[in-house]
Image (cartoon, rainbow, N blue to C red; front, side, top):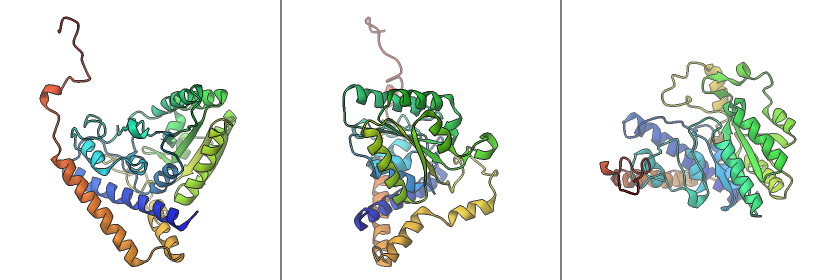
Length: 323
């Protein structure tokens, strides 16, 4: 991987980290409402996975999808506007944090239902195969989705039909407040996924380079007609499950041990060691990202709210007699 590619991964992670930190501020100030799930600590997954995909490939995400959306190229202004409930949001201000969507970029959610996006990804991959398109669909989900029937039904069908699909399990070790070992007798998720006859392996989800290389291999395999692949990306979220979560189920020692492997700082240190990023360059990047966020928040906040007259739009429809 070139130095420019590694810098690009770092820049994406930095944008995601600072975006999420601003979301905390805006939520605390009452500007963002509803549920808010942050991916602080998991930026390497977003940066690495999306860097490995082409613009025609499909992406299906979960409710912790801000980083995925940013890495896919959805503008910050559109994302902030969505969370502010503004009409210029990527989902028209009607979806909020958990329902980011942009069909023009083949980003199909954002899905508030655990494992709800996995059958959608199977459908997208099946459509591409039937139409002979040279595409793959990447489906991101958390380790909690592994316990849902939708996952097992979907990976079974994908394997049977040899679909061009990459299952990407963002294993942060906790399904909401339940530790993986408390709900799964076998915690090696890649090993279990392999029982469906799909190529499965684990990668370091705190290392964006490792994530990108693993995703590229999986996508190339699926695109070549060898059937779906499963990647277990082993990562950790530094924040609570959501802004409503008191986060009393984790040992502070465990949290600090993972913080020592902060993907943003590890990437910065590796770039510095190879002469690809110095203090001045880091400062310049930080300032540029700060300006981008400031401009996006300002523009999103000035965007219009949906008029009350549109309350039933997309909810009800008129009959032939106009009633």
